[in-house]
Length: 268
Image (tube, rainbow, N blue to C red; front, side):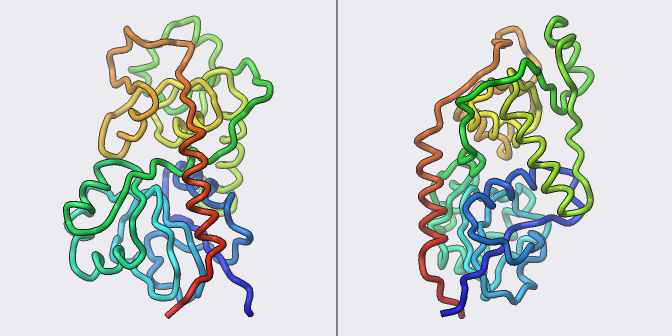
């Protein structure tokens, strides 16, 4: 019997290191990484392999249809501007073949369910990252907070803070290394203040107190399942940060991924 092979998502010209943080979460479950496959052209590959399809889809949604791969759709989000492109018979059949689809947010679940595609709310795969039950530093990290918002954060917190840029290297391997480094920083921090979804979700998994100040949209709505979401009014903010026990979600998502990895795959 030939060795099972596995793929992982990589990204064309992304400015968002959060994409690679999501790939890092998926990589925890893979016995090997045999192929690195561009999210926006995944339909062009001819590798017989399994791949976890988590994250934001996509600039070219038709290209995730691929008869050669066996996908696990979990923590799956469909960008607003792709709704009409996804819900056509060709893609509906493909999604139902590999369903039910685990959705990162209720909006994606409702979109799929209302169009005859079996779906459920899975939450975000980053919640499988291991909790930090050990020591923490005294670092307060501010990640991608606009200047106009910085002025609303208490000065005593800003004075103690370290600002982290969210830039994403263009090289795939460098981007994965940077994602891993950022995750290590978040995991050990005393407090993280951010406007970024894939800073918040890892922090929740790590048990790191976190404050989210940013948009409340379909893309970010999953945050509100776990901690408060602040857009501009910060008077009610607890500046010690927010945590949430997600052991139930961690177990559920991990079991889904482990079952997928261990089951026998049949390719066309």
